[in-house]
Length: 342
Image 1 (tube, rainbow, N blue to C red):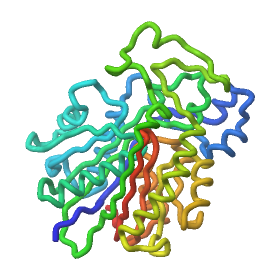
Image 2 (cartoon, helix red, strand yellow; image 1 turned 120 degrees about the vertical axis):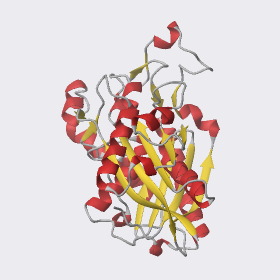
Image 3 (cartoon, rainbow, N blue to C red; image 1 turned 45 degrees about the vertical axis):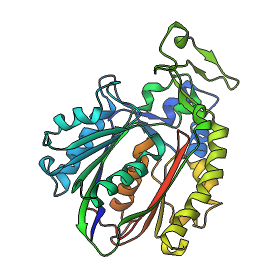
Image 4 (cartoon, rainbow, N blue to C red; image 1 turned 180 degrees about the horizontal axis):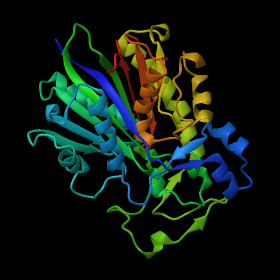
């Protein structure tokens, strides 16, 4: 039967970075050691003024073309996951089609999903391939949350980095499904727990949206900038991820022992350390890749897989359980079997 499989992953990060030393110089009450012990992050790639999230995604795609047996003319669908689009309209995926010199006889769509977006993108790619609509799907992610962060808001500035990723999902003959057992979840009642409130149709930009305010912890922001209710997002993660993992394993008819690696959204060290205590995996089964990247939103899972593959933690033929969770609030996960990247 025709099944979808992940055949290659590459990523791209900007050359600029924000280190813990930089942050400690701006926030003396947060020394380097404290920032690292809480977040597990040493540096965060940050775009310059002239670089967009799509630039990072396009560079990741070119990296993939250079390192995998795939060329632009073979792509028949582009899925671009971003919360940092180039424009309100048109869809940035359409612009990317032209920048990559892909055929005009392809589909191209944006999805705005955030931390769980890579899972949603894989689910869409699987559906396109296994219903005969596409043979080679290019799943791109690109995020520049740094553009949404007030420099005086250390609550989020210590966490987020900018990055792009490119994943080639390919049709192939197989007796078993290589991307399977998807489970999704959504709780829109928590939308304001992680939000950039102004700028859309509900709350358009106006003079009030640029007025800065200081929260109880001394963080500064306005309503055009990123707000995260850290305790609520933390509680949401501990509430929803353990059942998510259990449901994925049940759907796949697998036990925790059948999983070689657990690859979660790379939120930060504190959150993952707390979450793993409620999961059936030991710490030694979790792939971690946030120290040099921070939380790159929809790019964290593909970066983690690629890093795990490059450093030979992840071996050919192994089975991964992926889990994304965050802004929305949304969550989702799946199983990747018999992994083998170009």
